[in-house]
Length: 491
Image (tube, rainbow, N blue to C red):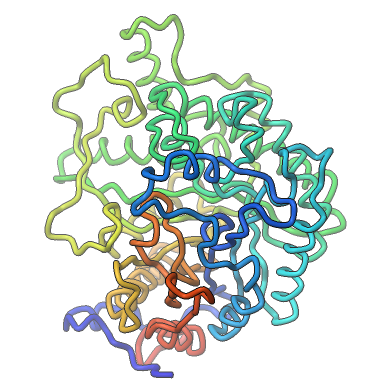
């Protein structure tokens, strides 16, 4: 394997990489999610989920009509995937449980033993190879039966999720020490129940995403309390949540643009982080949405309210923060505010855009701005009292899955350098980093056209052959040396 740092091919890049070693206990890993890699969509008793239903009834929803029916076939190839994880020499592997594979109808009255055994086998295989499993309980794939009952905008979902989480802790908790209740709730609430661009495809901007988020936060808190009271004394694990955000860079150094940056971060990240780490929604969210709701003719704010008891129940329910971040955007106050416009984007009253000069990945939302990750980590530290944080997703997409993935190598090295800078210069409490993703997989509505993997997957082969890209060797070397450059100094 070639370990050469194919550094930036842009001369200045090498000089800017941090030259301090990562701490010996810093965790390096990689990740996948159930719907994106498992396949076997209706095998061994698995129930239908909202992505199954959406893409089977509306194949044009994704590029080329791609879906997760087979995708990487990891359900049958999990041992091969664990071997790849082992080859990387990472400390941890983050994956998600498919709710409908464990509970086909979403309820705990019907447990699918074959699905349970699959995850037990996967966890056993990881443990046998000294790989720490980081388990996401929910990564976007709600059982269709629960969507038929109202989905995330329905208050009933809180107890259904709590039942499911309790079962997961009971089934797998002896071998799992890191739990994440949700992956990117902002995305599945906003896109699934607001804009309608992800499953289940419901368009209720301005109301749907807020109801979804409100119930997600209550469900998260309930799961944390269940673990705290029923499982932590014997299992000694940790429960966190994975939140995602860009860094929002002020377009100028004006006070107005600085305020716009903070406002956007509160509407995107604080929406979920504030109730968990500080109690209740951010003030700017409550004020903006109430003012706009009243102007639109609503009697009360479209943003649901927590009771004082709920505020206290949700507050403090994270042992660590999982952070997914890839890109940055420029922001300024929205020049022309349409008070009738619905949706969290309009409620923030902030305008956002990408600078055309920033390098881009295949995904339309991915731009290469490694300077943004240090600023974001610094903001999170200052806003939320420096929570213990692991980067649970960060990576680069291309179109062809090339094995000579120099752009991905550059991206990973530069973002890791920004993280190390934040740890060194700002004292940010980051304990790990996770590359998205282990293998090329189904990138949601972009199908198989956006490839993030360290390993190429041949989707034209019945065997879904995996092949290492150049980034594998570079990541292996980073983990082995804990360095981003040839000559590191101790931290």
